[in-house]
Amino acid sequence: MKYRLEWNYRSNNLNEKVQFSSEWVSGETAIQIGEELERTGKISDLYFYDETGTSWILKEMKKLLTEIEEDPHDITVFFDGGFQKETNQAGLGAVIYFKQGKKKYRIRANERIDEMETNNEAEYAAFYFALNILEELGVHHLSCEFKGDSQVVLKQLEGEWPCYEQELNRWLDRIEEKISALGIKPKYTPISRKENKDADKLATQALEGKEIFAKMLII
Image 1 (cartoon, rainbow, N blue to C red):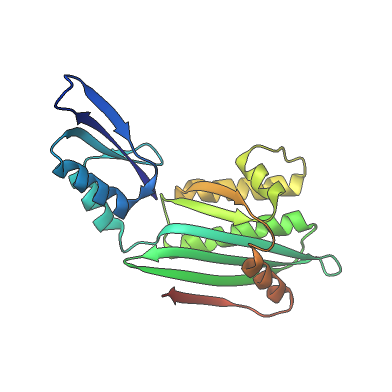
Image 2: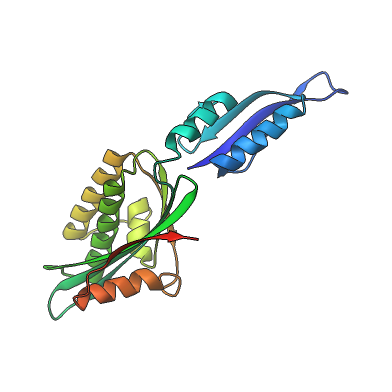
């Protein structure tokens, strides 16, 4: 989750207050900035806002971060789906980065499923596969960034492009229901196939029958 600060500045030479706001930053950075601002003795009405518009004062912000520190947060998801027309099978790949406590982790996972019709359907299935992993991690009411090389899928998820295929609309409904149930605030970022090579490799390995689920501490 990212946070934005807003505060009023009191100048010795001005009789009025001037309002300022920050860029979006991590929770730890937001608290550090807030503490430094308060030490100046020249600010008032300091508030912290998350991406849903909820606000806190500094004391509440510190308590919030203490409570969520042990839960997964700062989540980035890479997903990819591979489709094998001859067998109507799909390989689903997901790479998930997240922080928990003071540590950063990576999960690499894949799955092979049957009865797929197109590569776009495989991409949707891969996205849903990643959501299921987030649910198992206990992720809820957080912002998550989803990165994939299928611009069609990401634009349709954003609602910018229409979706006319009935089967894909069913996947859209399932994904939107899951996102709503988990309270996730999604950010969709199209990337190149090169940037998505890890998720792509996992999808290929799934089609080859190599099942993978690995959680790794990142140093």
